[in-house]
Length: 618
Image (cartoon, rainbow, N blue to C red; front, side, top):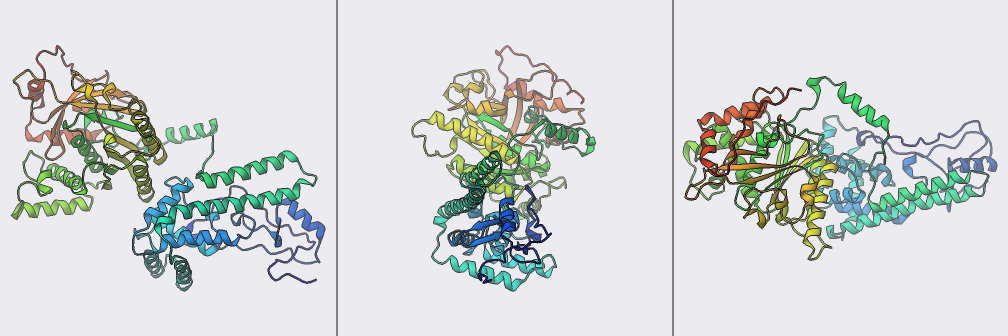
């Protein structure tokens, strides 16, 4: 019998049964991914047409236009890929590899087009050849922070492979890897990064078409046999859903719905954990905020948005920087994003806070203006001290010697919510320890397409998108926002004064409204003292009663909390000793908050302040 040169040997009658693919089998890790090899035909005997029909019906073989082929691993997606699909795969990888620039942003675009979560790898079955799978897995590992290099391009990949090979952490062939990279880079000639979104669309469409057509042909061959039609219809519907998931960007892992067994398993896992091993809240360093956040943020369990709002010039960005640095110094990973401050301005405020924390007493030195180059000159011993503090700050060492969490910041003037979401998702994928995003501020963000003059609808959609981003990335987002004009004539701000939309308050877990204390005519308010109005606290307060207002004092030059009236709610509490220690440190300058409260309070507001009680022991 004549054998086609490109066709595998047809099966012969044998007692051997080809291995059936197991549904839901996890993909191998990138380091251990092996080439997928077509299974050998059953040994012995001559060609048996009846057996071939049986294997096609069982799904172990598939009839194609090139003849019958055995089904290998399920990740091979049954049939050899057509040339146009291979071309799209090579084009996309080539664009990511080419050039000396960091191509992390392009790979992030591809991942978001697929709809992957920050901790999910790119599926290996998207790629038709072993070499393409390997390149994609390495690029994805660099993007997810699983390699020693941080730049994503062909040069960085080559360097990483050499270092891992020398260290014995990679057992592959460097020559074969170089050949693969050279071949792919050859495809990149004439390609442009501007065409990358189109390349993503073409690859998704081609992969979905190929996957669905193969399954459709298989079921078309089986439909005339004596099989259960309900099962075939279910399989076809599943194939359609998988193809739609590829083109619509819904390739996330996980079950669409959960059952009571999952709820029980999660509860038992947490309740059976010893207290010392359970996740603990990380304080913002501002007791007035921690009071409404159940003590702070819980890394890995974030999903909420918190709103810090004020009129222009009151100090909302100053308090936001203080909260971000408090979280970092207590060990949380924080990303500070500003839509109105420059990179230099953000960095100066962060370092000014660190210097003030290191000095442990009020000082005019090392202010944000000084560090931006707009204030006094820093020379001599002061400059040497500044260099030491900056070195410790860069090495993630807090002034008290404790290790700090990772801190990232970026300036994106008038960025849209889509651009902010892309940056946050990429940052979370590369740095899984990221647990908080501080966004300054909501009303300085740019417009999104499709809303036109309907500002209210756009702001509502923006608030919803930020809430969805928090849940998707398992982070907490502290959103700085603006109050509307109604707050200017009101004696007390409330959540109805949030500018533009009520959706921001609706999705928030807590809302704080900052205001300067009212003083009698002719009396200047105390410097740096602000009222924190607790507009909303969805999860209650760590306090026996509901505290609707508290006073804080902020060192605006250093974005540093000097005193907080709500600190007494944590005195004696063993849940948040870090807050109590920080309070004693910030008050070491001899500042009397009580005197400032009296001087800054209105004489005719008719309100008396009840002392705060100790929090309940739990």
